[in-house]
Length: 199
Image 1: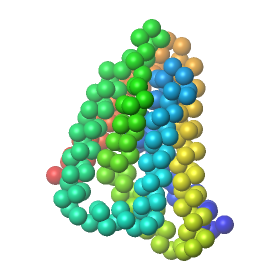
Image 2: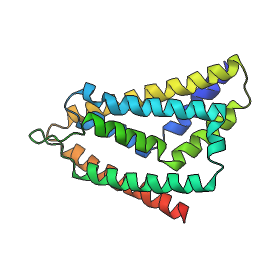
Image 3: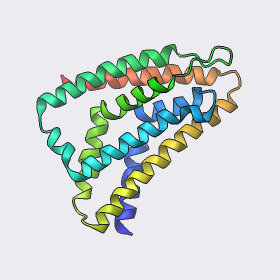
């Protein structure tokens, strides 16, 4: 039970704080016409987290992040993607007459960008989950890893459903429109934070 409880607490601790990935998945649940249409963003985010967790457990991402030039490229690319995504979300409409929810391709691209191009998210997974996994071996390490991955999938689907629930409560979409503006500002703020950290 120890690796399961450890993975459960650790994964929830990393994923609960407000982040670009969480904001994006929630916004898709809230802006898509039907819940199923938000699945591309949700599944992509969950698969991306799964890959990052597996890489961190096997130590491959630790090796990659040792190269400073690669870290700089990752951060610059992440900044550009976040700036672009913030502008798209800022301009998106959530009124019933002019719903301009993101199509499948953009959902997948944005979900990948907020998962793999956010250096702080990667460092959290590598630095915390990867390091914590070292203390386990064999079956215990497998249970720890599966628990972290399961928490990630449950969380993202929960965010998507929560977004859809808020949409139903917000008949005129005023709250969702404000949420879009807040999301865009938050994403731009993250881009600025990464830029300052790079300097």
